[in-house]
Image 1 (tube, rainbow, N blue to C red):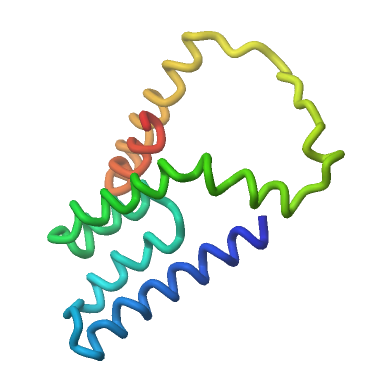
Image 2 (image 1 turned 90 degrees about the horizontal axis):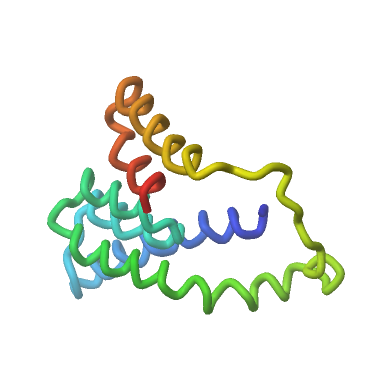
Length: 135
């Protein structure tokens, strides 16, 4: 977890600096909010990248959404080699058991109730959490 978190932080800063470097050399002109919106893609978190780009740089939302969903589509290809590198064969053979059966009603009501509570208490976070709940 520490390595993945550190990689996400490095990815964000490297991407922001990369966008600002393009601006410095006159290749493409990005403002700091635009560079920050682009940089959040480096954190490998699609819904957050889409939400943040809508707030910081709405004009880049389409391109950032395509990049974010492209990354999310590649997760099944990227994740297995990382998991093999960071875990032993014994750890990968562990079978998790489900503690209890979750009913269909719970599966439907939990995201709905959660989103309603968040929308009432923290309305600014509702779009982001909505993407997590229903994505």
